[in-house]
Amino acid sequence: ERYEEMKQQFEVDKELLIYISQTNPKAKVMCITHTNVAVNEIAMNNNGGGHFMAAGGKMNGDFEEVKSRLIDESKKALL
Image 1 (cartoon, rainbow, N blue to C red):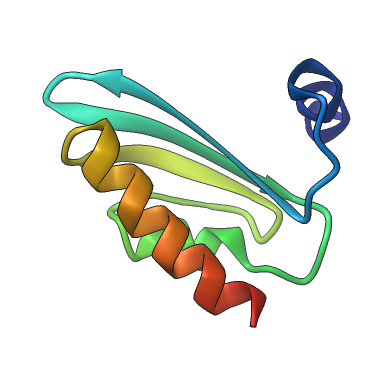
Image 2: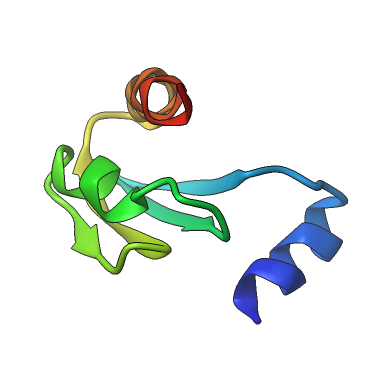
């Protein structure tokens, strides 16, 4: 349900959605998918956690650092 809301809000149709907001000194992250991508593993690799299809947490680093790390890990997970 939340995945569909985010898809509509951001007008996307992707396999994986990642939302990042800066909450100094950490970044708050939410990852959602409706595929076989284990977003909880991506989150756990960055001090977060959650469920297979929905995960997140407060991650160390500024917005750009966290974004870069999550993009790299997401690309690996999608391969």
